[in-house]
Length: 226
Image (cartoon, one colour):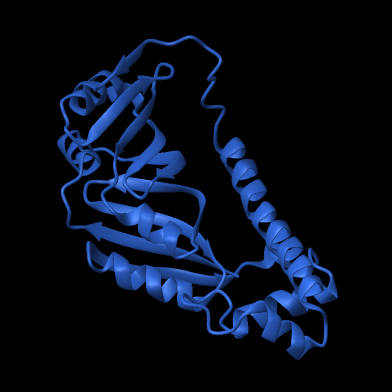
């Protein structure tokens, strides 16, 4: 697994680029969710521009729903400008948050393989210019897996099991390791669950450490855009 930091200069029209450019500001997007490769749910901290941002979002055809959470936080559902679906369908996972400033985006992601990262960068170049600033091994996985789990998932990665279409199937990889098909799948699923859980838990801890935001239980004014 690898951790990568990507800088994207987005060349497609996006309401987030418009509002940050208009008010010469930037913000981070958190708690992001891709919906059917078309829409995104996420939360931003608009600071003292919350009213101006809400008005701009309400007037944008890209935005489906606007919800004010507290004095500065806004939850949005908007049509994707393309970047996050590209990252997700190539097995990339967001680490912490991404930053928006005009047409500039900064993504901290985790990928299983270098090939996934190459695919992400290649597809992002179709919607903007991309710079890879950092690429480092994701060390959090060390010591999490049993020897057999590590052997199985490395065999799957090296053998092209995660390619599309798959270069090797589970039965052939199991035979190569001299274990049953069922045993191979059991170790593989346990390894995947452990590694993904580690990444997601670290994301939660990192977000909690950054702020006390999103007191979602507080009743706040809500606005919707149909």
